[in-house]
Length: 163
Image (cartoon, helix red, strand yellow):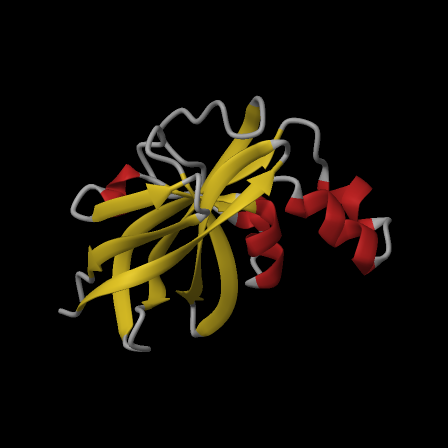
């Protein structure tokens, strides 16, 4: 297992200052780069509907997530789950820190319907979906050291991979 100091970006998002971390999502032999908002109030790490599209996942075909999800960008009306996901972070020395998750919920905010989104051209579709971020929750953060300096807009996570 590799342990690394992973840099964060401290950014303004929807009028709030938040810490964001970049990583690769590995699922079903596919890798996509993604941003996650650090959320110490979230019990689990969750993917947005945008990442489901980017991973070529048909959201409606997934099994339902068995635990309730609320508070992510408002009310969440539909949450599904994918299994066997790895998040690959790069530390400040360029080494990979891999964190395996047995299951990861994908949430769909109440306002979004796939048929409505699919009518838009790809550029508009991405803007709609970007309004709902990926969340890096306590199930990943619990074993880490988290440092965020909001004033100087910098931070890092010292995270040990579990693979």
